[in-house]
Length: 174
Image (cartoon, rainbow, N blue to C red; front, top):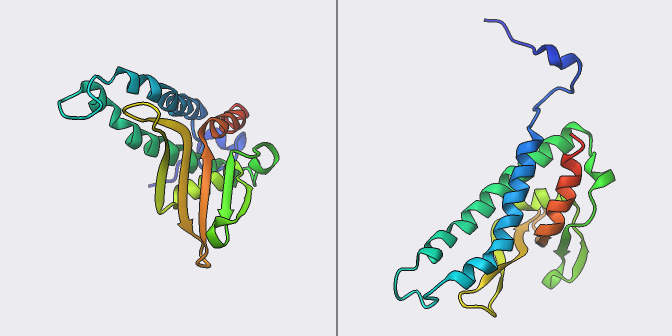
């Protein structure tokens, strides 16, 4: 058996060549989930959950889809950033905040690369819920928690809209 080397190899960098159009489609889906969450909550006829409500049933997919999309996008971004030798450091600025220290008292900007790292390595994830409606709906913010290799706890606050904007600005370069 012989190894196949694509003729395109001489024109492109080695490694994975992800389809960035798919990444932009996933960004659209991610933002759409958050923007439609309020409208879904307005359509619910029985917010008490005492009887079957098809809208509540459909809305249950939000969490799984958000997780799937964020893991896909984060892995893809890390592959590209590693291949391009930290290309994101030049273009991708703040898309949230990273909290460290006692009681998460130290706050710093969260870069796109670091956001991807935190998404991938999180041990706990929480959404941001607007409870002014019944049922509540999602705000476009997610909190990720974990521990560094050195044993220090961290919390990342990801602004989904800023994440999508920064990611899209990178995706259009490839």
